Image 1 (cartoon, rainbow, N blue to C red):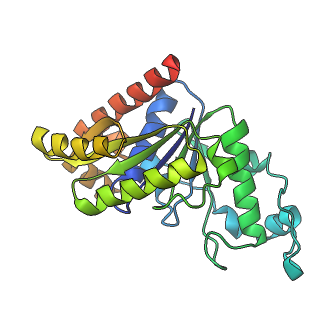
Image 2: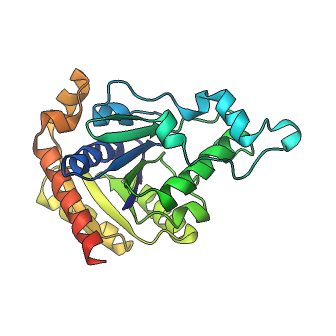
Length: 255
């Protein structure tokens, strides 16, 4: 199962990604979590105390694998099959990689680092046997058509508010264009049944099914303030995410 989690900044996608990783690991599944968000907060959401250095900081490895890029010459398909083992870390039963940011030309730049990260994503999403959870940046443009074929489920995290719905609509359009097979929504920070009904109706109009909801929970604030993973503090939000995880696995079994 390969799960990509996206949404507008600040909606709680990293909390969902990190908590799902811990839940699946506790249930005995091999889990690989990939932090592809430039904010790089997934390690703390999982509870990893010694996170791996971003791959983009391994300059020598990038040059060896992808070339120097001098004169625009570099490898479009560098060797990446050993990167997770060599440059990742494992805590709480969750293996983790941090992609890092690309300073030159943005996420779509034609450079060795971009070539390596794209090749790595393709490899992990198409060939990795673990459950892979990808915490994405706000857009999904860095998922190319080839990479998207490896995603079983994309979850867009939505909170009450027009801008969050607008982001979901853009993600739905892009996901169709690149061939993501399934797009679902998780509604976060819900304040009650009426609140959830309203936003679920809007998402259904867009053709985005809602697979779960996470209530507003002060335990998440306490976890953030104490530097602990939400999974370790528990609370209503974590229980809701566990139900979402159960729904994901049930849908995978029925496919």
